[in-house]
Image 1 (cartoon, one colour):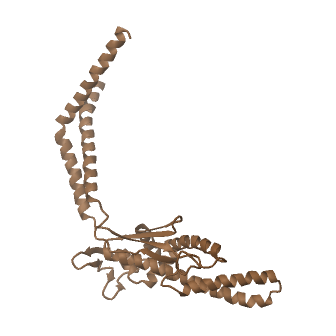
Image 2 (image 1 turned 135 degrees about the vertical axis):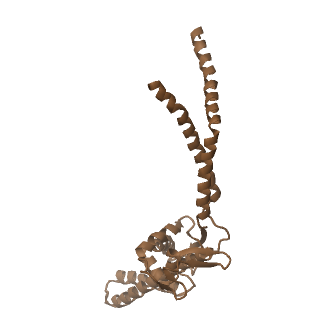
Length: 305
């Protein structure tokens, strides 16, 4: 390395600490506005966080009942073992898609009269009395009567989808569902309502479809001359009879509770500490930027002139 290169290298190393030291001095001199700006951001965030209602989340886990097992996981019929696994794999996504559907939500709020008010006009939760306070200008909770036009189910459906999360785990045949609300009691009750009403609706639909299929098959078999087709139709009748059995036994049809809904003890949101800390850090960054701009922009303006 030549003397010129050594000189340039040493000059660069000497200049760097000077630049950092100068920057630190600028920020130190401007610490007052940085602190003021950060404090303002922190205070505003603290007020905002305190004004946000606590949100409680209730959740549940369910296993998918295997067809032909009477609710257990062991298939009792070799003939229908393949059918059982197939139906088990299909029933989970079907249940999840039903819960997510607009048609089911419309059915749910027609059956459960408390679901829509709790979803749309609940204002706050009284922790002492453990009761949900509704907007008295919109809903009469005593008479359970709307004082204004009832929210359209499509409008309420958007709020429903914001608060409800459901998913099916194909590997374990487990359905997880959760719903958040300002009331821990309402969160638990709403999750229960969704779970059991979806199961009840699918039970009714499958029972109706199975009854119609049996009526058709028992009428069509005597008119069928081909033995192969008659055998296939007899197998279909056996499948429909199995469905009839599953829809008429047990407290649930599609799902079996693994971890039932619960009343949460603590809110999961908002994270007030994180909101305040993030706002304070952002305020510091804004303050630093303000101090640097105030220091360098006038210099550049003078140099330009």
